[in-house]
Length: 71
Image (tube, rainbow, N blue to C red; front, side, top):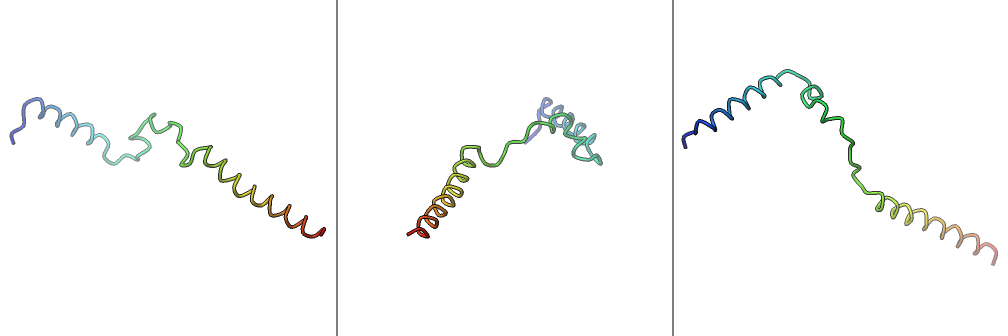
């Protein structure tokens, strides 16, 4: 397939941009966009639910152990 003049110009522009990036560290290449806030891999809801299950189970187990020791 033959390139159109518009495609050729776009490819040349892209090649220039990529050539300017060569040999530079990634932090310099990305620029100010790399300083965006990172998203956590797990939402606060699921983190809270996990904490409730783990610590709630621990709490119930401790109550069960203490009540068992009195009887």
